[in-house]
Image 1 (cartoon, rainbow, N blue to C red):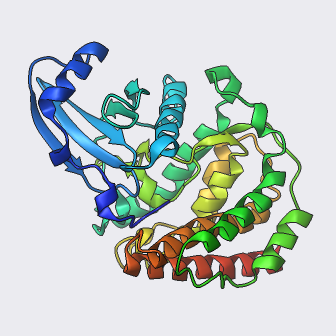
Image 2 (image 1 turned 120 degrees about the vertical axis):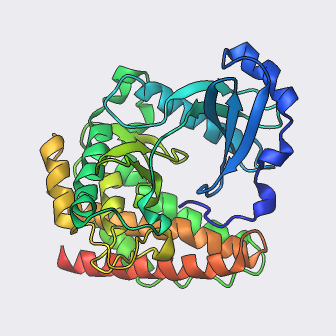
Length: 353
């Protein structure tokens, strides 16, 4: 959901790629043979662009950062590729990494190639085929998220140096992010409810540190591809915020963005399912996660409040960029409203904790 609604002009498109120029790169990394016979921009991206490529009998997907994002976008591609590479051979459902081009001079930015995922996303407006199918989605995604949290980062080659103090840094990290929006022209300023009180509560109730794990970083239904034949996860997608820290942050965000009985989500249309689709209550997700994890879930309320605080800060960024003409104005207003709902939800959660 990060950056949802960024101006389309900042994104790559299949029409901007020269198939003949791509073929030497494909040869160098050993992907397919012969001419490229198909290039197609795939929908569903937020900031980054997915382009399907057909070469010979092979179909794969290229992932690019926004045009003009410079080293920040290049670093995102490298980080995503590093995490996907680390997950190879684990039981975490993810798109398989095929090749990374870290040299931005080849096509103007770093990018990588990954396997296609045969699946569907439940936030696309189509209802699941049955009530039983719908009710199985929650436990399936919670199990997949727990599997990710179970992977020991060091065992798959990921650096854990910055994992120490991860939770202690979160409030300042996101307050600084919110403060930075003041630098964008025409931004009307922050009016997120209960901001200071939530920050104080989070600082005063930081849970004890647990073993570091891998975070997806933006865990909600929009970033999950499900199998078509049964309620099982085909892949967790969009790894641009992935990092090493406390994986319960992922569970917290999954819970606070989970659709209610009417199919609606606190983040609006960006996390909702078809009207009336019952994907089950939050409790079924917690129980499925508990069955798979070794982590202590005692402080789960704190992680839910942090998820509201963190995601609200991120979504407010699109509102700020929209004010500056850098994102769609209507989307900016929608995500500002979602950010306010997240902070209201945080206030309710901490009062109940």
